[in-house]
Image 1 (spheres, rainbow, N blue to C red):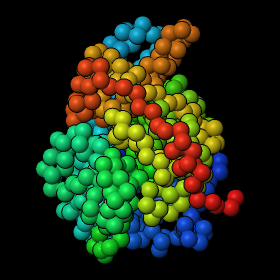
Image 2: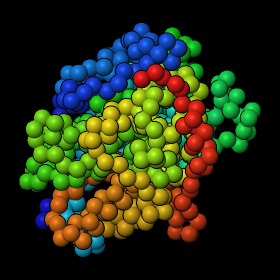
Image 3: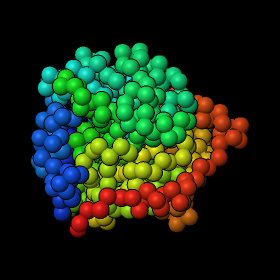
Length: 452
Ligand SMILES: Cc1ncc(COP(=O)(O)O)c(C=O)c1O
């Protein structure tokens, strides 16, 4: 009864998979907020190095992973694929549940897959300093680690509520040599403007992005790095699904359902896009299920419209499922999922009918995570609990229907820095957070108007 499927380092993928090569229609263009014309490379150059801008618009199917990036990946990749035998038994399901475990990276999540690549391309372009946002702290940790390896100074705006919930995340970022401040902060004009109106603002990823962008454009030697949403970030994460494909073949299996949690969409795209692409090229088409938090439901309740990626309206406009850039999600415990928008490529796939989306509340997700931990041993990050919940719902459906389907999900990170949330759950103090319907309506009414 094989439990883990391990690939040798020599079989680690040498290329990322670019779904833009296989989509039946291209995703809508990114627009300049002033002119409403498609942005060109020069518009993005103050923020990103040219090689990443090139990846943003590339339609090449396979993009080579540079050797120095592969050399770093080897520290934890290929990541293991597990069969969840014990969870299957606990659920009494005929389904076979497999999970790809990304928590084996030094930072504890999937985020280094892109952090290392971004640090590499920035260093190659002569950049000295990277500025970014972080929600849960996983992305900030990953970029701090990558910055240390490539000799870049890293500055991080961490969403206030997460900064307070998990102080040790900041300590890890500092261990890697980064500087981390709570957002909204007094270090930027935008942060100060938010604090003037709401001194105890809990922060949001949208606000932290505005602060990071504001700082990044001020200095020639500084660029901005984003931990999710953008095409190049999703591209870098596809190594997850590519490895999983090889590992499932070792198990003589292919998924009927692929599940991932969605904040900005990167770990989900990482596991799902290679399977969607395989289906688009004539292969089997598994069901693809995105799981999001009910308190920040961009894919299930958002509007598919052009919007800003940040609250301060400094970014270009992208067409995506959005709750409105002025929407502040409640302070629930999956900080990495508290984002108002969704990756344009994930949104586009949803519009094309290539994936499904569901939303669950935090208490039921923690319940799923605890069941998982008590059977499989790994304590998932609160974000990953959404994927666990999604996989369990599918496994129980298989039980009801008497079907032995194969379910694959992405266990995108461990929850070792999230134990205060688990403590609250065990104390019965964790409640479902609900967003304010009026605030959501206002945020949606305030979407920028872009002629069709
Ligand atoms: C463990 C974990 N999972 C998921 C996410 C959500 O991001 P994405 O949807 O880009 O994977 C985060 C973001 O911080 C995270 O830390």
